[in-house]
Length: 560
Image (cartoon, rainbow, N blue to C red; front, side, top):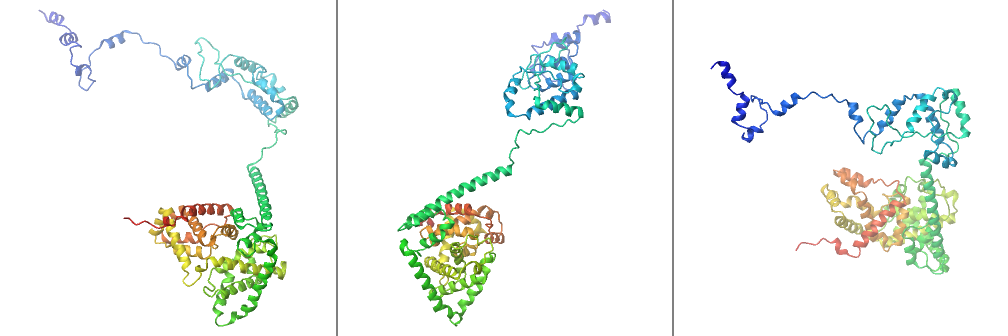
């Protein structure tokens, strides 16, 4: 047997391997093993079949897109239509101008425009300008033919299939061009011939109000409604206190949320038990009290230079210029002399406490309120010369009324000004326990940085928050204090707690003793008004409702 015969008798390697181990009998790991380096590539029937087939014509992207329905490229239909129509800028500009004119017409043409939107009045895009009419006729007819084709607009999500042998551009939504009103036709021609393409502004549509004007309008309406409420409340209060016998309990409920300015002098005198509830006895009581005060002045005031009173007089004389130094009214000599007499007479008549720094601040709200009976000016913010604008009798009446109302106030908190001021220390400790119960994180933050409540709350109790609040806020605060049972002694504790909680976020951001003390002694309340005081009072009333009638809540229970 020759070599060629032997080679022809031997089967091909692939056939021998196939007969020796068919694909069905081949182990699984050999049949499905991926190609790895060094492994021979075996011919597969699939590869042989692919070799026998002729290569197909490569599909172009245009063919693919024409036979594909896509819901994402609807906006391209308009671009294709415009490119097929070969529109120029000159064709489109008259359309934009006419559209701007149509948008600026009066609302009287609204029905006509609604009919145009329906498609009945659809007109070709030809432009309304004589100079452009002839040159754009052919192009506009082409666009109008495209617009008349039935199709779907952008946003529908369906694209029509276009045959390969069709040269028709894809359908686009009809272009509605509203013919301009006759009143503007001449103007459009003039502007076109002159080359001015600016769209004229509409004179029929009013300019919308600006944000500032709307805010001012709302503020004016709010002020008007507020003045109406204040007027109604003033009328109600005046009618109530003008009765033969004023019910003080009902009056307190009525003015707890604030007293109208015009009625405040009389209401404060009534709630301080300085004026009697009976209307017929009020004038007689005022005359008697005022005469009694000036008898005290005549009796005690000359003794201010004596050895046993010289120290009291010296301290009063030092503190009075410090009283409201930023208000020019209290730097006038006649006003300072009134303060000197009121404070000295009270100190002589109350030897258990005598004069203590801080009492001078408590005269100020009474003085400003009683002064408002004789002037309509805001003496806090405006220049007011008391010696030139007020008679001596009026000044004497104000001075006597301040003395008696101050005496009534201090009678309820006199332990705050006795030796070692035990009343203030008790209130500061009560404030500490109250804050510990209602805001433990803030209390722990103050304790962690060695801040003692006595270091900042002593002044709050001694001056009744007058150094922390503007004078107008103090007067509003005292409206509620006078209407609240034991307002200056008990309710003030809850006001201080609410006032401290007000600043908890700012205090928790401070990380050292110095930062905490600087913030507590310089609280940003210069721009506060009645709204902020109302929120503090509401929170204080809530705390009082929770803790005042349940004093055991303030006592920490010891574990058993």
